[in-house]
Length: 239
Image (cartoon, rainbow, N blue to C red):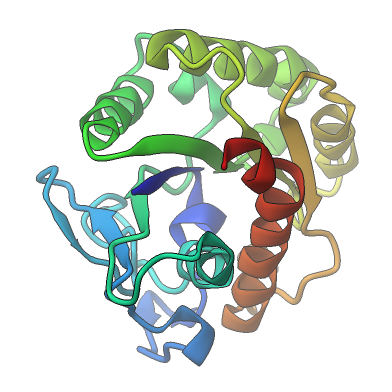
């Protein structure tokens, strides 16, 4: 399998279709299950992936549609897998409301992500980390100022701990957040200049009524943009 780590906070976990703490259950065709797309459960067991991908990971919040399934479905045609073969393994790790300091090496969320990635790696190659996080850091001037350095350290630590020195990271530049600091966090994200780090910009995607989380249709667009970033920058190199 080609394995992808999905991590960050709520917009990666998915809040598409969540209103007043309830998910509407609507799954767009671009996010429909496929026998070729599996997910690693919280119990470290592979199962056919379906929305909400993070339901047993981001357990303190109500999960809805995120970008992961749309990403996987968009990548599948380029893999030229035999029909019915398990082509993609998704490893959900995102947890809503988390700041990047909670993803530092030694912290529970970081260690859980690395543990899950290592478990998944026994069944295929880890192709990339998809990362969408930063809204919580925009709430703090100090966290905003430290964001770029913390993100660069996260990338270096994950690559070192998984033994993949050039592991691709596809990060998402924020679509929403504290108005005082959102542009500063976005600038930090867009300023990261490391090998095999690509940024997809979510700015302008439609938001839920909370003006923080992406709507279902926006998550589909984001997933497809992440797929384009992967196939355009890394797929041929990894074949």
